[in-house]
Image 1 (cartoon, one colour):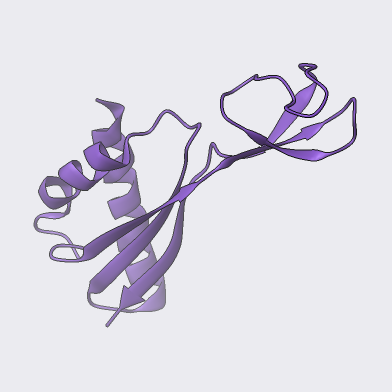
Image 2: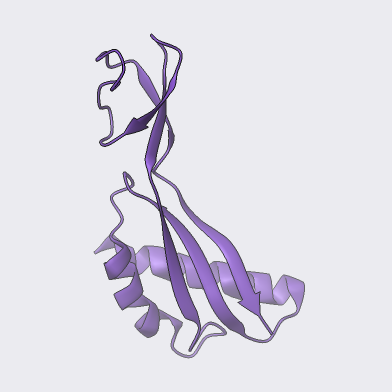
Length: 113
């Protein structure tokens, strides 16, 4: 389960931010997870309690925002929704679509004290 390693990395980022910004506790962490990124939000949520135990993030709320797939069709020159990686453009049906959103994993916000 790679979500465990990803969750460990998120907690490490929060701890690094605490050292550089001087806060003592994370109260809430908001993550953006792309719908096409092969990351299961439920698994990250499940892993978070175990991974954060004994860290500055212990007891914090983990909020997850799902980011829809989006792409730029090089053939028709439009921004289009993507339902799958390397999928066809829903406008013209061709496969020259560059993904612009939907595979991210990012800490969007931290609520700290």
